[in-house]
Length: 306
Image (cartoon, rainbow, N blue to C red; front, side, top):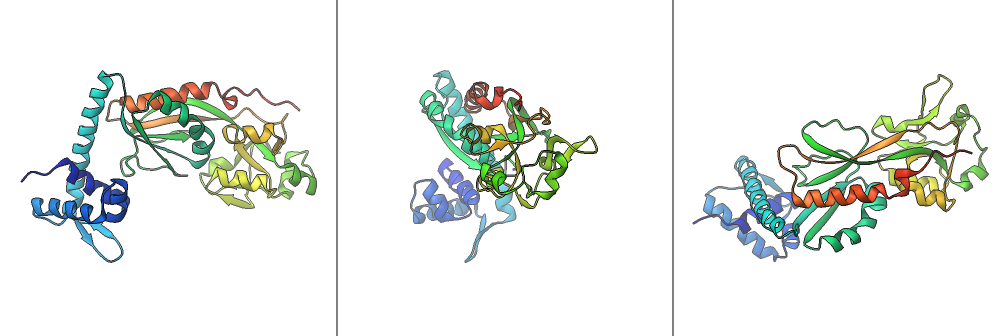
């Protein structure tokens, strides 16, 4: 008896979601149906793919080896379907996009309606991770990365850049002395990142004629968390324009040291696997994102002078 594509997809989805219940929900199946499909696959292969405990599922060595082959088969089928759709000039299928929470909320989410109107056959799956992820492990088609790229195993395409600024809420500045010199920052509550450390280097020059490196009083892995802290008056922060443009326009955050601020921009790239040709799904999304970013305020904001 031959293995079916449905069985392979069920197996891969159980591994990706971590449980049969979650996999069944994602595949629009009943839990019992997904469990039977998985059992049928193991019976056909005459081996155990997953060890079932009361708390979790764990891949056997045979399961690990088979999973790689299963993914390749699923990807090949998806690619074949996609190529047919390309011929009809309608990219289709599931597109898994990953981006840090701030970029997802402030840039990608506002573009989704317009993108879907152009490509209604594409099923978007949007995921947020604050750190660098393994695209294969997370089953991600394209990831948006901000800052200098390090991973040479990936294709990349620049989609824009965004300037960083030192900011604070008016309420914070009312309660604390407004810093006029960079060295006065040492007496303030500074909001910074847990990682990478490079994000704690601000685009203002200190007494040593180097860009100012802070020691955060409050640190977070998420830029969105730091933005919310700044809005609540918890301290001074340095964030990218793509996530603070509206806050500055509405006066919720104001720029400090405008004249002393260097023009430092964070590059924004779309990345995907080097060993695969860019698919129509990925191309449609990256093209749309790059064009939209060109029209955004953060991509063309002039240097502030005050």
